[in-house]
Image (cartoon, rainbow, N blue to C red; front, top):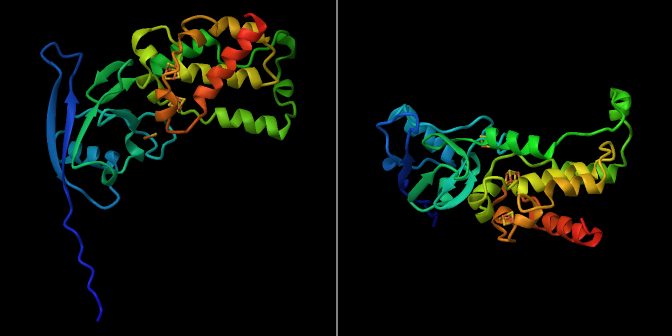
Length: 249
Ligand code: SF4
Ligand code: F3S
Ligand code: FES
């Protein structure tokens, strides 16, 4: 006898969002709950859009690519940092709590200014190719051939999308405003590997050889646990620390 598949009724989701507009003196942080019916393959991006389109056009959150590439949709999802566009509601309970990433300037509701933080980190660590002889810093020089294995290693580290999840998950970053975090230490490893960058190890280590860098890390491992790109962050930090200890930097 043929069995007729019975389709389960869609779940009713309760999405609680931490709302606050820091630019409005009358605003104070509060949780607001929205109820909506779960759709098939619904992501938090889809759910938030539905809330904004049908319930509250003032809700603030950031999305660009919807594909885990731009890094703009990081938020705290039931207490853990993650990318909303890559999070399926079916993997979450019916009650979902969303909050903005901590450690970044709040723009409003779920929107934070990760770009400002990342630019500060990048300027502090000078995350660009440095060449001592500026006359040589022409396009031909920058395009010199690189061994494929090395290019692959650099590419692996360049997969970072600067989403800020590692910063939100890191106790040190929450306590020290000057901590460059796993994202910054990843950048140092990336440029240290790059043969076009003529900075010495000592130059690199001087940028991260204090408590705002390698020695601020308490090996809490939240960065690696919540990096949506699965970058080997803890191993890189441990490597930098060992190298610096070995060279007395
Ligand atoms: Fe995001 Fe991972 Fe880059 Fe941190 S290291 S910013 S968690 S992609
Ligand atoms: Fe923070 Fe990661 Fe170190 S969570 S303390 S940077 S291992
Ligand atoms: Fe780009 Fe989520 S919208 S990573």
